[in-house]
Image 1 (cartoon, rainbow, N blue to C red):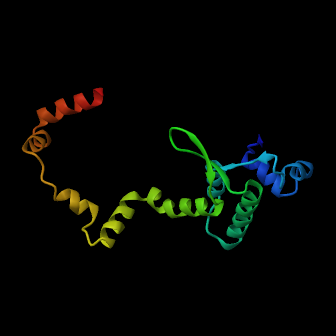
Image 2 (cartoon, rainbow, N blue to C red):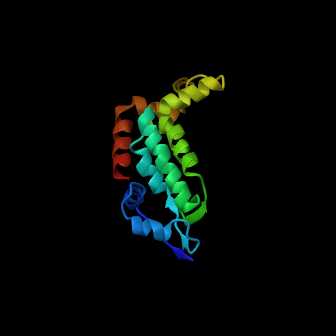
Image 3 (cartoon, rainbow, N blue to C red):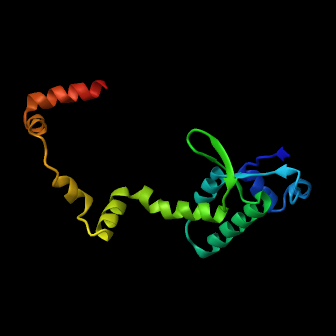
Length: 154
């Protein structure tokens, strides 16, 4: 089996009618494995606004990716590049769902704490007792100076 990886720009061009001969060769051809990657989803997500017309375009892109790649996806585990079956729509939805966490993590954690019936994260941290040595370091300017010099060296 021949493995082919297309950059998102090339996939987009094929989808939009360019490279017709290439499309004819690779589309629905069992001799080729043509995966998409999480990078493709990242490229699409970068233009995500949630507007209806734009969402229609994105859904069309995702459907094209799915049809061409048969949902074969390359992703990085941190140690390896893995090929597995994933829906492009599902991966994009995960990015959209995670967007709020990445944009404002403290707000997310406070909302999560509230859902669990807990105080907000600042209250939790404020109620953790500090060791006497930590209080000394904070209150004593000489300790603070030594600590700052140590921390700035690491």
